[in-house]
Amino acid sequence: MYAKCGRLKDSHKIFDKMFNRNVVTWNAIIARSAQHGYGMEALHLFEQMQNAGVKPDEVTFVGVLSACSHVGLLDEGRQYFDSMTIDHGIIPKTEHCACMVDLLGRAGCLKEAEDFIYKMAFQPSALVWRTLLGACRVYGNMELGKRAAERLLELEPNDAASYVLLSNIYAAAGRWDDRAKVIKMMKDRDVKKEPGRSWIEVKSRVHTFVVEDRSHPQMSDIYAKLDELTRQIERAGYIPDMNFILHDVEQEQKQHSLGYHSEKLAIAFGLISTPSGTSITIMKNLRVCVDCHTATKFISKGFKGFEIYILEQVTYKLLNFAYNM
Image (cartoon, rainbow, N blue to C red; front, top):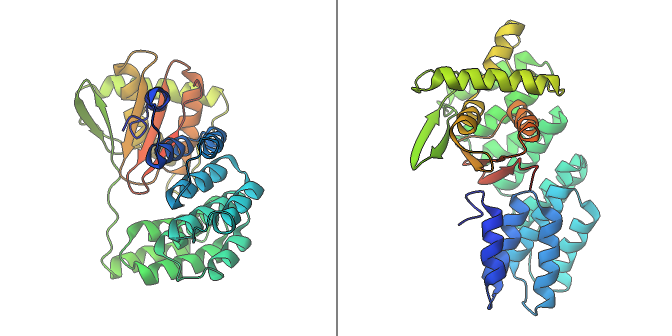
């Protein structure tokens, strides 16, 4: 529970005080350490688990493979995947295969990831294809991304996130006509993209934000703080990523729209509303965009007294920006 809320230190304190640790508790601490971005720590815990005589199960290896993915241990990930079957008799399931696709995708081995999918012993799930599609967006592999999207939309034709990922790939490549076709396909199929929202709990009250929000009673202070943050991170080297914004929008308007995304507003509010040393956890109903991910890294580096986390509800992924831990 603590780790899910971004309080990994507290979860470790409780784990360290436990006298009887079973496979469930080991799995929890391994998985959450990996989810928070502490891949090496997760793998070290896995070694401790085996040394303690606790037999790993299929859930354990999801955490282990995820840890390898987060820290880029490609060869080690391959070895753990093989060991799962050879040494432990565990048959890989969709979650394990998705972790391997994520591992290969993060490493830029997109063709190998696609080959891995076609060699799977069972029909690839939407999770597997969505993972590959996400990697194609990061590396700008348009052709493979198109193939992954086609497979994904066969399985989940009403999944708005898949259309958005594909349209972003086209946008980054400057293929605006193809992007327009994807948007039209969404409209023709009556697929609606859920508006992005971010929320943060401060003093037992939840505060919700949308892009360019003006409804919060402290909005003037929030915008002032965010403008200050933007100037600060730009001096540190941050450059707004405007690849995915419509090409017919003026450059200044593009930058303005990016600057006030919901998660940035929530972070600014968290910084002015909580004392230094606080763990700030933002909840986001959609994926965090590339620009907000980069900006949050810069913000976290500039505020050493804060630990910033963003939990993507759509992927159940906790993004760790706590550079001072």
